[in-house]
Image (cartoon, rainbow, N blue to C red; front, top):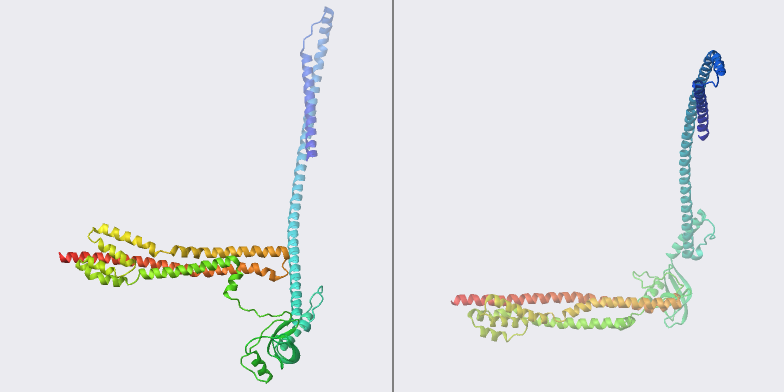
Length: 480
C-alpha cells in the first residue's frame, strides 16, 4: 500500500512542479517585456527607435510559444489524469481481489479452527475412553485379587501386570461355584483342637461349611472357635456339646449352638463384661467427677420430690376443712384447723385468713407476697439440678478432648502399630461422653418435670387462697 501511494503521488508532483516552473518563466518574461528603458544618448534612442518595429514583429511568436507550451501542459495533465484514473481502477480491482482473498483465507481459517476443535473433542473423548478402560481393568484386577484372597487355594489369579482375560473370569467363577458347594456341605475329618484348659486333644471335627465347626473327643466336646494359625479351640458356650453330639448321632436338630467365624488366622478371645466401676474407672478422673455429680443430682431430685409432695399434700382437703368456718366468719377456728396441717398451702391459707378484714387489692397483694415467700421453698434445688444437667455433657466433652490428646501423644511416641496402646485414651474419650449424657439426659427431663410440678402447686395455692377469700366475702354478705 505504501508503494502504491508513492506511485500515485510522483506524477502529480511532477506535473505540479512543471506547471509552477512555466508560470514563473511566463511572469518573468512579461515583466521584462513591460519594463521601460531610457536610452543614454540620442544615438541609442535612434537605434532603439529604429529597432522597435523589429521587436513588435517578434512578440507574437513568444505568445505562440507560451500557448504551445500551455497546450502541451494541458495534454500532459490529461494524460496524467488518465493514468491516475487507470491506476485508481487497477488499485480498486487489486484491493477487491485482495479482499476476496482475505475473506477466503478467513473462511479457511474458521474451517481449520472448527476442524481443530472437533479433533480436540475426539482426542478428549479418546482420553476419557482410555481412562475408563484403565479404570475397568483396575476394577477387574481388584476383583480377581479379591477372589484369590477369598477362594484361597481354589483359584490362582493371573500375573499382576497382565490384562485380565475372559478365561480368568471363567476360572474364577468355576472356583467360586466349587467353594460355594464346599461351603454348603457338612463334612467330618480327623484333627486336633484345644480344650477349655488349653490342652491339645485329638478327635473328630465336624465342619459346617467354612463358617462353623464342632470338635468331638473323649476329653472335650463342643463348638469350636478360631485359635489362630488355622487351629481350633473349644468355645465355652451353652448347648455346643449337645449340638455336636446330635450331629455325630446323625440327627438334624432344628437349633444349633455354634460359633460362626470368618477366618482361622486370628485367635478369638472372649470379651468379659465390665462392671459399672470398671466402666467409670476407664473414664479416668473426669469419669469419677461426672459420676459424683450424677449421684448429687439424684439426691437433689429425691429431696425436691419430697418437698413438693409435702407442699402439695391435700390442698382440696384443706379448703374443705375450713370452708364452713370461713363462710361463718370464724377466722380463728379456721386458723386453728390449719395449724393441724403442714406445708406451703396451709401457710398461704393462714396468711390469707388473718388478713381477710383488709381491702381486696391489699389482700391480693398479701397473698402474692406469701406465694413469693413459698416460692423459694418450692424452687429449692431446681436450679442446681438444671446446672448439673448442663455441666455433665460439657465435662464429657472435656474428657473426650483429654482422651484424644492422650491418644495422639501415644501415636506420636509409639506410632499406630499396637492398638492396645491407644485404647486408654480412646476409652477416656468415649466413656466420659457416655457418662455425661447418662447423667444429663435424666436430670434434664426430671428437672423440667419437677419445675412444672412446682408451678402447678403455686397455681393451686393461689386458687385456694382466692377461693377462701371469696367464701368469706359471700358469707359476710349473707350474714348482713
